[in-house]
Image: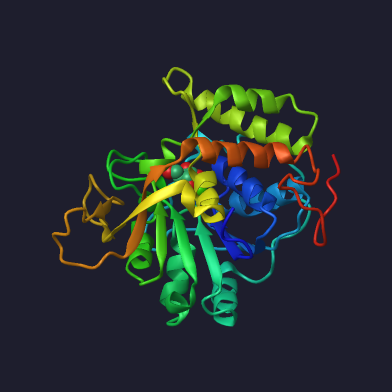
Amino acid sequence: MSNSGKRIIIDCDTGIDDALALLLAIQYPDWEILGITAVSGNVPLEHTAPNCIRICTLAGKKIPVYAGAAQPLYRERHTAEMVHGKNGIGGVELPLGYDVEHELALSYLTRIVHANPGDIEIIALGPLTNIAQAVLTDPHFSEQVGHLTIMGGAIHGGNATAAAEFNIYADPEAARIVFNAGIPMTMVGLDVTNRALLDYKIFDRWRNSDNAVVRTAGEILYSFRHFFDGIEMEGIALHDPLAVACVIDPTLITTRDLFIDIETKSPIASGKTVADELRVTGKEPNISAAVGLDLKRFLKLFIEAIEGYSQGVPGSLIRRGRGETKLVF
Ligand code: BDR
Ligand code: CA
């Protein structure tokens, strides 16, 4: 694998697939995950922030979690309990091993990026409200972020509406600010994440695991399955885990450099990521958008990482070291 030794911040709205993405990220031995910033999205912030802690506790890690925006920049909150359940993780109950930090996400993001110019990789898995606030607040933030990988948007299509992907739809003004901020960015959108399907058979197997992490991953995913009863699906789309995996191993995707802006006004296309595929705007590309996916290698990486929690043997992705909390069940 490439891209070792990175210093990472994960900004997320945990969320079923965010939970799986966190479990994957924690398994990658070469990363230093400095902090997790929570944002309102799939469910309100009062659930997303503690959910990040619940997942870290489950994985035996104590990564600081900072509470961010409880509302989009300018609009009403749009959540997705229908998909993620009222508590955001499909009704699965997990212990809360430690507290949310006193410092708020905006202060943390600007402070840590300022202290480590060019060195921090942010992976954004929810609406872009926290990141936009940092761009608006700190004039140096955009030039000092090392790289930003976004799960969100699509060159073609949508899932919240026919035109827009959920994370962008939930806060289009924030997305517009971030996409136009000049940060080096990769967009891992529905064009590839809708292809990243995990077969139902796999998480059915995980639900019967002796290991608490693997079993919980199976239960969280299983809760999601009911949403698709009656809809023909070959599996569940691993949107957020794919974005994390692309930072672990960028060769999992192929990308295209494009100028992409965000529609914020249209009643039918609000939140659409408008991609200038034919370069008709004359604008320089502002983002590398994922267009191709090595599905087999991604699924291998993801499944091995989750199942690695039950192995903990040399050669697996699991790392035991300082900063761990002991999981008590
Ligand atoms: C994205 O929206 C959320 O529901 C998921 O957590 C993911 O980040 C997929 O469109
Ligand atoms: Ca998410």
